[in-house]
Each structure stands twice: as C-alpha cells, then as structure tokens.
Length: 32
Image 1 (cartoon, helix red, strand yellow):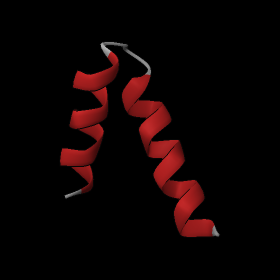
Image 2: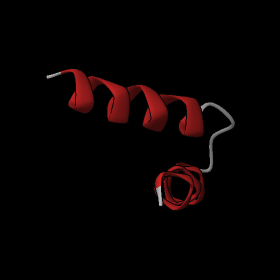
Image 3: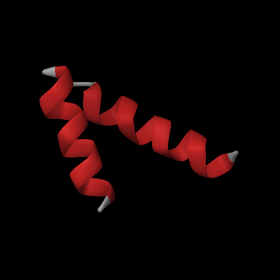
C-alpha cells in the first residue's frame, strides 16, 4: 500500500526524488 502511494507520487511529480519526498512525508505523518 505504501509502495502504491510512493509510485503515485513519482508519477505525479515526474521527479526522481519524488518517491523519497513522499516517503519522508509518510514518515513525518506517522511520527506526528
């Protein structure tokens, strides 16, 4: 499931670092 979210971010952003940013965003949400 998280993989799908990250892939979606990659597709939406068209950016090699988009997946990493998406993962950082997910981690930040989990930490809150």
